[in-house]
Length: 305
Image (cartoon, rainbow, N blue to C red; front, side, top):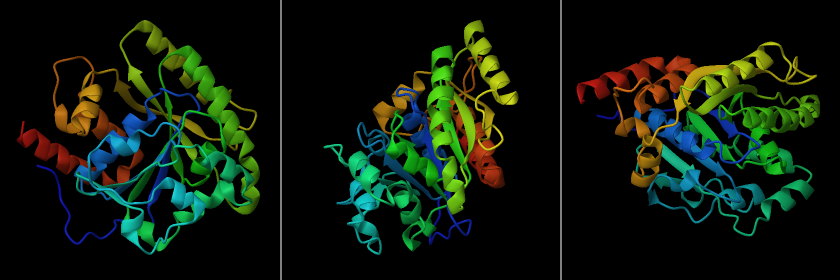
């Protein structure tokens, strides 16, 4: 039922590089990066997920690997891998069109190295400009839930937008404003080098139908609309995605089965959206130019229910 591509040709001249960021841990960055990547891949879009959570890697282990490359994020940033040899750095998942670069820094050395390297904060950006990565339509970069040089280099690699993850809990919203937005403020000087900061698309994860959750989301929306999140709101752009990711057991099932959630739940009798509907809406908001592909996947899914 899933769309396939043979002799793949990228859909655009350059890949869209979209980090998934929050300076707070446990917001669901890895889960949603993997599920979005799985949905895009099934729609015939070639995707690379980079597991940038060097301390607690998750995104690169959600889906089984058909091939695991000997190198990963560590060698990519340390510039010790030959990027003309694809098989040395690119691992293949069992999902067609979905590849990964694994996180492999168990001794937590990368933050120190990148902090002390003159070009540390732009190494990932520079690496992703190499010909190897032009085969992809979308590169999703998972990140660690912390405010660090690793988060900075991931943000600076973006080509236009990044997903900012937040749960509908007021302390989490406040931490997003204090942590993620403050991190962006520290990166503003890179404009002098021609590097524009990505537009933040805030994604509410683990949504429910309580009045408290709804009130929290409304407060976050008002902060964004009024530009009250930063004194540099004219330079740091935020908007809230209309898609909500609901707090459903199917996301745990996805981890357990090693499958993207849209394959596991296409329809539901609940008030909340099904997993397929949530991923479809999210993909359409982030990549509207490929909606026809998402529509085709939805039609095939409906035909097989």
